Image (cartoon, rainbow, N blue to C red; front, side, top):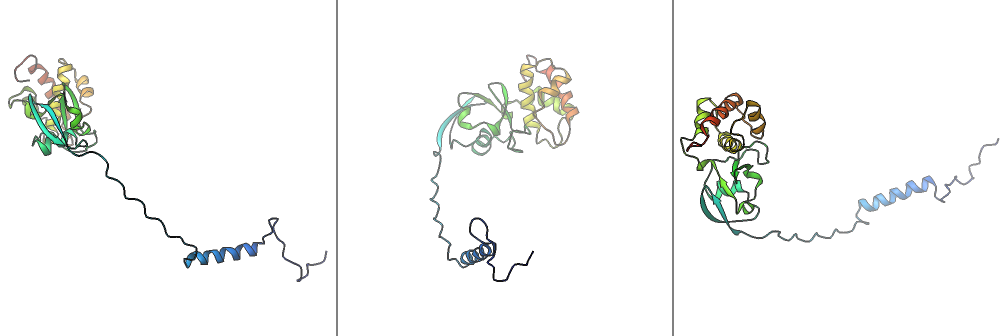
Length: 210
């Protein structure tokens, strides 16, 4: 078999373009892009319109009183309590319904204040830690059993216990573990809290200071 002569044309692909030609074309195109010859100016994105209405008046049934205030619809019940009404017992910690430090009662049920919009709380009976008398049985039981250390989670725990005991007046320790699983204590005083709940269950049965 004889060698190909230098004068023979290069083998081309079926498309009619040689590999050498393709590479040369890419080089030219890249140079054009690099020098801005093929670049097109990008059109500016239209300005986004402001979404959502402004503040609106709402009425809350809070700790046995009617409270009127004006808030934006996006404001949570927790923010309304703390920032607009100066009721700071409910704490902001995780702000994502995980720790329970912002627990309040709504129609007797424990809810996370950070997950309820203030505007949606209208028509509900809302109770916070500020509604309880100083000598209430639940807080006293927490003190008796060292159920608090830093105390930051305690208001949320106390309100969660109040809601829990209204549905489980004679709880077992297992009931307590399950019923209060949505509240966390970073100090780890769970043993004292469990004992406090069991003691409070005895003191809140029909008593005036529940």
